Amino acid sequence: MGWMHTARFLTTAAQLHHLPDITVPEIAFVGRSNAGKSTCINTLTQQKQLAFASKKPGRTQHINLFALGKQGVTDAVLADLPGYGYAAVSRSDKQRWQQVMVNYLRSRQGLTAIVLLCDPRLGLTELDEALLEAVRPRVEAGLKFLVLLTKADKLTRAEQAKVLSITRLQAGGGEVKMFSALKKQGVDEVAQLLWQWSHPVEGSTAAAAAGDATQGGDTEADAEADDADRDAPSSSN
Ligand code: GDP
Image (cartoon, rainbow, N blue to C red):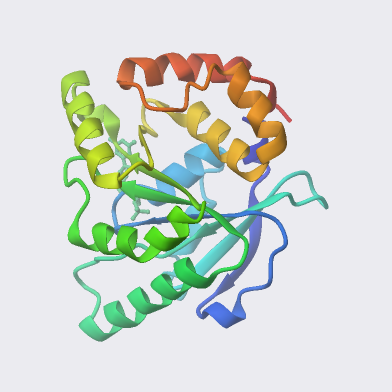
């Protein structure tokens, strides 16, 4: 998926009002600390260090934006939000950060999609559920939502199928997919979905070409969709 490989650092901000106004679709990546978010972003963008920049001292509590699209023609932005739930963070810092995140998710103009990263061995935790609840009104109003179950390589096929169906129930109609950075599982499929979400007109053609493989299905169907995605029209740029 050449489009995602164009990602480059745009800016970083500790507070919402310091974020630039963006006129292109913005896709937010959120999740508990250690869920695999940085690894996922680095795998999708095929850049080893991109999201790890967000873990540098001084940036861990920042929203980091990455531009997508050919140089000079940014057509979407990835927003990497700090991981939450990290035990070593003080209670007041946690609360402050959760408030910034909720405000961001509720009010950020141009926010088109949210990708919630989740370690399937933990499942959706209380904090993830609180986040889902906070964005529900926007999801009902059309905001796209994907729960990405990471580190799929640590689960058997049967375990993957089970956690997929449980999480689909919990996600209340949002997309849920398995992902493994290690095995490159779900990489093309997620890239394809994010392309479709941020390019709705062209995306609808691509969805038809892929046989709408991004909807529902079990892990086997997902794996097949991965293969289909490799040949889909929007996967090269
Ligand atoms: P973050 O805190 O959400 O950004 O999580 P990281 O990307 O730093 O990943 C947390 C840990 O999970 C690291 O030790 C990663 O190597 C590991 N990890 C991330 N993705 C995968 C994966 O697909 N498979 C496996 N086996 N481990 C992973």
